[in-house]
Amino acid sequence: MKEFYNSIVFADKIWLWALLVIPILLGYEYLYNSKRKPNFILSKFDSSKGASTPFKVWCLRFLPIIRSISIACLIIALARPQTSFSNEKISSEGIDIIMAMDVSLSMLAEDMTPNRVERAKSEARKFILSRNDDRIGLVIFAGESFTLCPATTDHTVLLNQLKDIKCGDNQLKDGTAIGMGLGTAVDRLHDGEAKGKVIILMTDGANNTGDIDPLTAADLAKKYHIRVYTIGLGNEGTAQIHIPGGGVATINADIDEGLLKKIAAQTDGKYFRADNDNKLKSIYKEIDHLEKTKIQVNAFHHKGEKFYAFAIMSIIFLMLEMILKYIYIKPLP
Image (cartoon, rainbow, N blue to C red):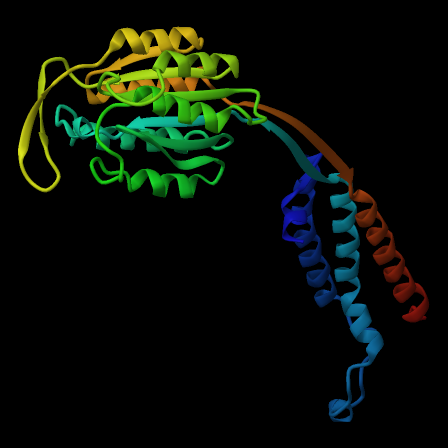
């Protein structure tokens, strides 16, 4: 019912100003009646004590109110009240995305705030929150690879899994198996029904272990029409890491940019280099722009005329006034 009244609009609103005349007419009516001379005079005032006011007198007093209601209904009818309902049918064509993230110990390097893996998680979280209609999954890899979360639209579960990622604490042997990370991501996407399939592969190193060659995995991605965006993470030169369990180590940047570029080019994707916090943020924004979900909206609008009810009410109250005035309350001689 509340939604119904909220949907009422008036086609000819100017008529509503006429409602201001009704209080003036009522005031005049009662002021005029109070100044009229009485039609009969009681011989003794005491004889009227205890007498109840006749029903006809009450009806006579309410005639101006009944007439005002009739006029008000007529004015509202002339303003043409309408119900306005809108219905939107949305058909969305989401895409399937797997985020393959390097979790080797080198991802603890502190050349990003607070370190590479935490910065990568933060920007990935923002990306996931911006993709409401897509199925997104998460693969992690170091010396081995593991599917942490299959592609899903339940982004709450996905974000919880992302939050719990820790380098050196994932039961994966250390190393950088880019081929296995990419191969696992392809395996999770190849039989999906989505028209668009994307892998975002992020690493800060070179492939140095694993049973799958990265370019072989890229060939599989191309075969299944999966586009791969590769991101090389970290600054040039050296960076410090705090090793889990204690200790500090210094590592050298060893990103195999040539390999990452080949994987991207082979799959019709794109390679990005993220050497600082802002660059990584802009990379995710660009990928988000390149892979925008297609949404088609069909809007239906309907307006229904509702002045009939007010016109009928106006006639009913007008007839009630006439019946009371000219039939029930007989005019005095």
